[in-house]
Image (cartoon, rainbow, N blue to C red; front, side, top):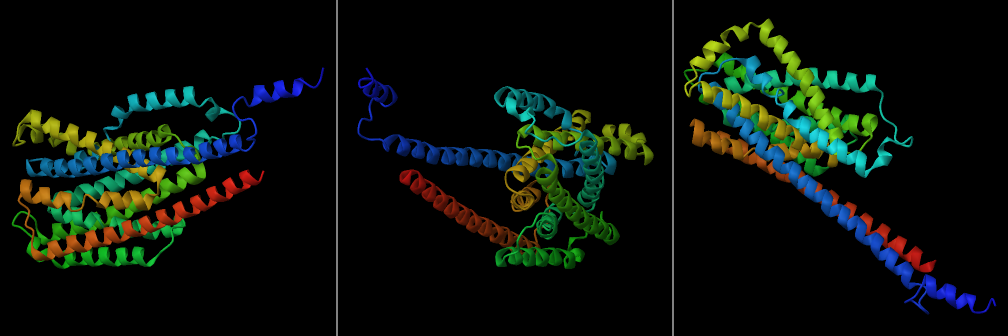
Length: 388
């Protein structure tokens, strides 16, 4: 009675693998090898999408911000306000991703997931929001008092600041390529500083140029600190890997920053001149409203791309991609705003691009090293499975 039972059991468990007990193990090992590759491809697709968001949004927002000033806009607080006021457009996206996360991953709310305290999150949102107010206001002064090409090149210094902050806050290692990048960007900014006399026009005094120069440098440093603190918050406080978390870190600080800008707009009494500003806008009232609206929208698109790259890669990488718009904005500035592109500015731009390429190459080397380590780990796992 017991003798026939064994073949039946064998047939039921492995109907096509008689005499090959290791085949199932090899198949499962192959499937495990394919899964990381699929995840890796999805990761690259997300990163590419975030890069497009950041580049398109930042380039368009910078040019629209300069258009606002060139066509008659003069309110620094309004220019600051639109950099954060577009956050409501992200509510439908947040609702969609929050719903899909809960339905597809019911375990995200389980007891194994440690969510940060509400008070901790509120403190983070408030701190980041206030930091954004100061940062955006300094950027507004820089864009008002500097040619947009000079402004864009100075913004590249945020990569140097971010590397410094990442070293202390995010354990970012300094290599020869990163140091080369920092030196080149420093030289680039220095060339722009000594080029101040040739940049001055009849409409911008030297004093205002210096204010714009210092404000842009200060904004770059503040922005770099903001990015490093964001990455630190993702790693140490939030500890969740969902896109809704990225949107939360964009929307709620933006709400705080928008409230701060409203307070600044009324405290400075700039709101009293907004009606006159809209009437005297060279392109008309509709163009005035559309310029501000699309500036707000494009800044939000840029911010989502930026936060996504911080979440997926690092704050330093997101800043590097942000500087990729470096050669794009000055070219459009020459075409649309007739900025002067002297030899010193061209050299500064080439040095900055060299610095950018230097860091990208370092990231490429890190990626190769990471892939080599993963392949060795997979080979060891497969060998262990075959032995078993």
